Length: 594
Figure 1: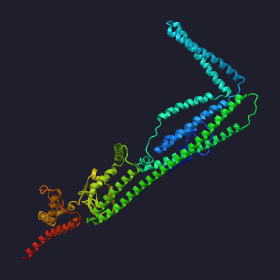
Figure 2 (figure 1 turned 180 degrees about the vertical axis):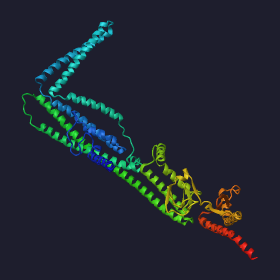
Figure 3 (figure 1 turned 120 degrees about the vertical axis):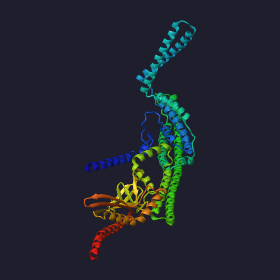
Figure 4 (figure 1 turned 60 degrees about the horizontal axis):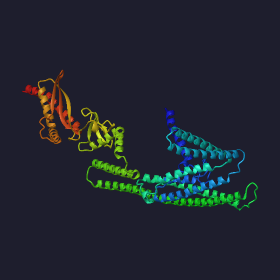
């Protein structure tokens, strides 16, 4: 068993430590953009397979949904415009660079170029033939014309596919990437059209956006979200600066080519050299524009970062407001408790009632304060009826004994309940009440009422649910009256019945006052003056015995005075019995003297 307990503690502890280590090692996963470097400072190599680097647009596309205020969305919109322009210039540069990279065709590339020229001529002839047959099929009702048109279309499709395959082979052999770049550009234009249709630049202001978080938990969550957003924006800014630096190096390389002396090349004519210089000049202009776009993009990201930082200050202000309200509620609660206790001390009531009022007042204040604090922290639940129903059902099942004990405490505190010092009997255990708690009642056991009324020294505790589910007897609610009895054995003689009558009269006389008071209190307790079916008069039970007559006398008495009454009655009975025994002897002595 000890090993199982150790394992039950060690296993969750190991899982917790491992989870915390994993959370620490993967903390950057919640802040970094997936296509940027790990730390946001050193930009790593591109991991995509696109010929044109589209990371500036991917960055702003990932950051745009994070913008929550209208100010942030304006910065996001400006960043989108700059990133879009920069990517367009990147495609233009890539196409011009691909044109410069085309070399003189030789070998397989030259054969493919000749094949493409031939196929282009064939496709052109096929297209003309299809046009002619289309016109003829419209003017003719002969089915053969429609069949010829279908055959011509099929031949055109075959030749076109062959031409496309040859073009792809030529691009692969010669290194021409213009076709692939053009495909990427077409895909991007389609995505941009869809993005523009879905883009929404409206939203609340920074202050309105912060005030939407009405609870302390929401404001703290917003503070952490803003921190994550600031980290992502800072990474995007570093990316833009790094791209600008990289483009500056490319610009310097292009400038060196432009400023280099134009050496005579036998394999290249003057017109080709001029075309190459013109293309390099265009690339130089595009690179300068891209550098400026990246620099402006970094500035926009910096302003966006500053805006989020200002909004973070607003959220911090609201968090401090919520904390101040909670502190104010706790202070008011403490002051109100002190005032209530001071006022209760001025009320002239008994100590038990004062303790009860003090407990109820303080408990009510603390519960109300706790509810208000929870509302400030978490707010009002959106599904209040469902939540209350589930919580109530769960608490009722799990804490049913405590709930019954709590409500039983209110029953015991009522007019017909019990108080400290009362003599009660609960579940067959009798004793004096020494404590009535919120959930439990404690007795000092005194034994059975009819046999042993002395304290046993044992404390007996009952959960207060007995006040609702069970039953209890409070002997203090009607003057603590109870029936007591004494047992006698009267020897057989000529004066037996006279002795019994004398004893009965003595008991009636001894308990006359108690009988009258008990009847009066019972009438007040029942609220009815008619108690003809009740009797508090002493009663006598007679039973024949071998040694005479067994007599049982029952009478009413107060619980706290029962032993004194019993002792006095025993003294009276002994005295009466002694007088009856001495009376005949006295008469015989007188007769002899006479």
